[in-house]
Length: 198
Image (cartoon, rainbow, N blue to C red; front, side):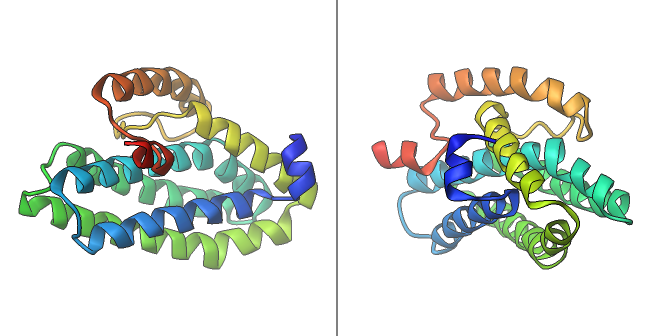
């Protein structure tokens, strides 16, 4: 548990729901179809990076906790991981499509629908069940692990990469480092803070 978490008392559900709200705000902006194609490309790059970091952290820490704490945890975790895999395949396609191409909006529409369904599943079922089944201290500790994982996680989709621990934990730091170098060389923003600086 970090000092910041001790002070704020945020648990893993708080952290993940904040991620959900941030991604939703980007989706809304993308769906408005406002801005230049370059800005829309940058927004798509940011949302992809945010979603990849989020999913890597969930697969490394949240879903294993669900497997352990919930009677149907294996089934719940597998369902959530399969939704991540679907989203990751869509993100991989979206990465290479120009925002002026009609396929960009089709892929974006599929991605937003997939993620919104996934968020509804987690916030309506998984998160309340985790809070009921897992001690608060452990949920706060998980928040720290998730935040740390997001800092070293990949920023680009790797649909062929393993989704299950321990393989996904081993791949994430290496892939994350390579992705960050590629992002820096390409000038690709991976957060809203980076995008605002441009």
